[in-house]
Length: 237
Image (cartoon, rainbow, N blue to C red; front, side):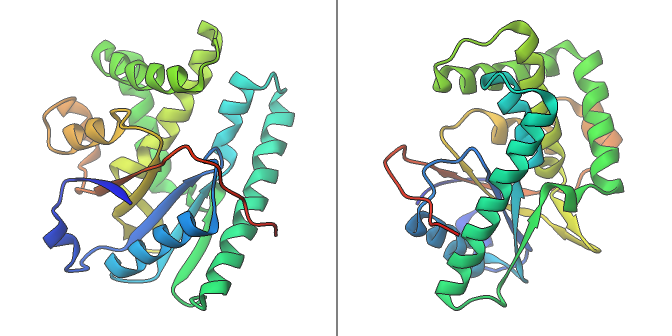
């Protein structure tokens, strides 16, 4: 895997001090058995406890509204159906590897708690009141739109910004499952959009210090896994 580490080093990661989660967008295509296995093996090797696999399904409704001419109910239904497929895919992959006790699969709805809500609220306020932060989000969005090679209206750009804003709490503060904070993130992505760099800058108070101080952030570790856009097969469930 082509990895880029933020807020840590390979040596520190080898010490297995942090619980790991893998953030899986239902927009990641292709997703083959080999790709998934590389993610799972890396996460198991570096996690201090059971690895969480977060299927980011419901949040994908913003992408479908922007790019697929869906209605709001239709976009949410499609996102959940895609989530079902990815859940089944990872369930089968883990079973095939004989590692059912090492991983737990969760979905977007499973991380909707007070930690997430409070962080999202502050992120939304920052976006609405800080034009520099807004510019940073729009810059990341424009790189994503350029890769998709589809025209997007200003109205639909707002929807896509919302995707990024709702993703940010999982990156800034990790995710909470029960009382455990999963603070080491394996983050598959098509390119270095700037999202990981922005998260690192906020956490280390190089940018948007007010947001960082209001959130009283613990430092998360992000490991970008760059995806090669080559043909692959999604295993049938």
